[in-house]
Length: 173
Image (tube, rainbow, N blue to C red; front, top):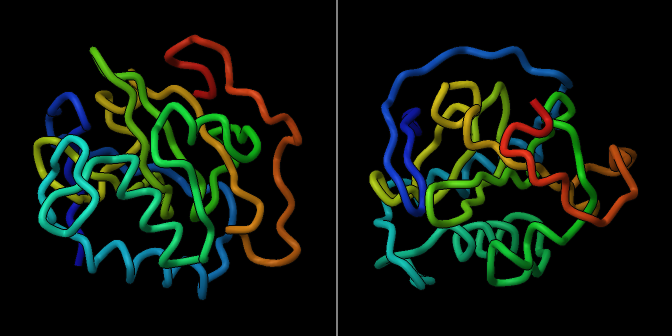
């Protein structure tokens, strides 16, 4: 089972956890695929530029998770990933949505699971699950993107815009 911990590509955070409500019912099959693959990576150490189970960074982890769960090829960098798919509001997050954060000197990405939880390659914890609703992540939240081909059939994107959200670090909350 994955534990809720906090961390980021360029920063570490307290592990305070706050439960949060889920805004929509996920497809249980697809959610289970996301969670199963995430669990296979749990504890893999963070390594800047890393792309393997010996060490991986946040954008490579997201890229690999997408390839293995839904056979979707994402760009390699966080900068390119934030320009992929459609913008989605944080209250409308669904399993598989990309969640982005602004850290002190870098950007960070993870994959939303459910109930405010997302999986990412944390610089302090390695691959782990964290809660979006802790003060650490809420203050650093940037935007979220939905990749339509990663959603169950019949689920439409919340926005057809392909441009990133505003520069406000709290946009979407």
